[in-house]
Structures are given as structure tokens and as C-alpha cells.
Length: 355
Image (cartoon, rainbow, N blue to C red; front, side, top):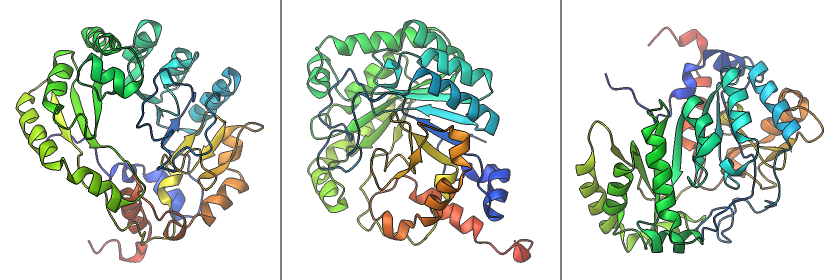
């Protein structure tokens, strides 16, 4: 049987967390996203943290980064709490963080699985050494299909495209167990170049390319209207790109319309208890969708440890007060997972044997 990488069912494998929530206790997170820095060496016009039409990141301060001592404290807490995985993301470019290699090594020594999203520009040297030795996967965000288009997308020199391709090829040549993937965000500019880009990624040693739509608005209707003009082109490109699939490379199709009705049929965000976000501002956020926003802020760990905060009454109360049916009437990447978790947690234990 083939083993799936993407699934909404993963959290259900952590029976200790499910039992804690069923008993009304706060479980340790299974997975923590850490945004170590908000500084980025690219200036992408479509970046969700810097786009006025999207509310993500409205309170973000670009200069923020987690101090070294605080990061060490966070790592020690995550290990002690039994957190199972950490993903580094932005904010900014996580591999720019000056203590990233040290942090990866400390997490790995504590038995925590590691992954990172990145633009790939710093996937070399000691950073690449640490990722290759310890990470489960790394996913490079890429959108331009050649030097000029890449430079236009990201506000960098045109030769930066070949630099990233070289980094990918060099990383792949290490023969690491770390899965090297790519994330291709589709808009009207690159819609007709997906095959071309996927071919380059495969040649550079990427093991998969995940194709997803760009988000231009919080409103589903507006987002879908934007994509309608070139959706057929994208579908044809993805179909053609699948001819590249083999034992070493796979095209992952996540290109779809955004839902229009964001109503949530549940009043409890169970998923926020199994995956949480630590920002570069040393604040804890409910989720990726609400990072660097007032509505998504659970509290600060600037003057207390993550462990103290997570199990404290402030965090418990904030999570109890969070009602997705009221507060989350927007696109939510965890909606499907939350529906499953809430269904699981609502089951009457007296009737479980009647499968």
C-alpha cells in the first residue's frame, strides 16, 4: 500500500493528545511552526504578508527575529513537552536566521522532526549541511520559470534563478534522506509556464512540485474570478506536466477554486491545540492564517517560557474563547482537519463499540 504524505487524518494518530482534549486537558502541540525572522532577502509582489488585500501579517514588524537565547529556551521546552515536529517558515526567509543551523541541530538531538519552507537562496554551506543531516523535508517556493521572470517576481537579479537551481542540484547530489520539494504558486504570469518550470525542477533534483493557486483576496468570489481567466490553461499545463512523473519526481496538483462560503459548523478550534505558531515577535498565534494579527494572538512568551505559557490559564482561556463560527469566517487551511477533529471529539464513548 502506498503511504500518503498529505492527509487530514494525521492528528488522529496522536491518541495521547486526543485523550487529553477529550478529558478537557491541554495537550502538548504535535507540531509547531516557528517563524524565526521576518527579514527576507526577496521582495515578492504577491507575498501574503505584504499584500494589502490579504489580512495576513497586518501587524508584522519586518525587523523582528527571535533572540538566540529565547530560541534555545523554546527548543528546550519543545523537547521537554514531547513536541514531535517543527516547521520553519516566514514571516521572512527562515534560512536567513543566523542561528538556524544550530537550532536545527538542537531540535534533532532532542528527537524532533524538522522541515522548512524557503526561497532556496541560502540552501548551501552549513545551513544545507544541517538540513541534509536532520530535516525530513524542505520545500522551495519558486514561481519564475527563467532568470528574467524570476527576477521580476521576486525583486532580485535575474541570475538569482540559476543560483537557486544550482543550490537545488547541489543539495540533491548529497543523497540526503531529506525530501526536496518545490512549491509553485500560480498566477496569470506563470500559468502557461508550469511544464517548463517543472522540467527545470526535475532536472535540478527536486522530488516533487506542488502546484497551488495564488491568493489575491480574502473573498472567495474575487479569488475565483481572478483565476477563471486562465484556469483552463493551468489545467492543461498540469496535465502535460504529469508526463514528467516517474520514480524520482511527482507533480502534486493542489490547484483548485477557493470555497465561497467560509461558515464554520463548529465552535471549537481543536486544531489550534495540536499545531501552533511561534512568531518572530515572540508571540503565539492560533494558526498560520492568523499569524501577526490581533485576532490570532494567543499571547506573548517574551517574558515567560513557551512551556509556561502553553499550559497557563491565559492560553487555555484564549483557546476556549475562540469560536471559529464567529471569528474565522474566512479561508482556513485547517478547516477540513478541524471538522474531523471536532467530529472525533464529539463521539459518545458509550457507543464507540458499535462501529
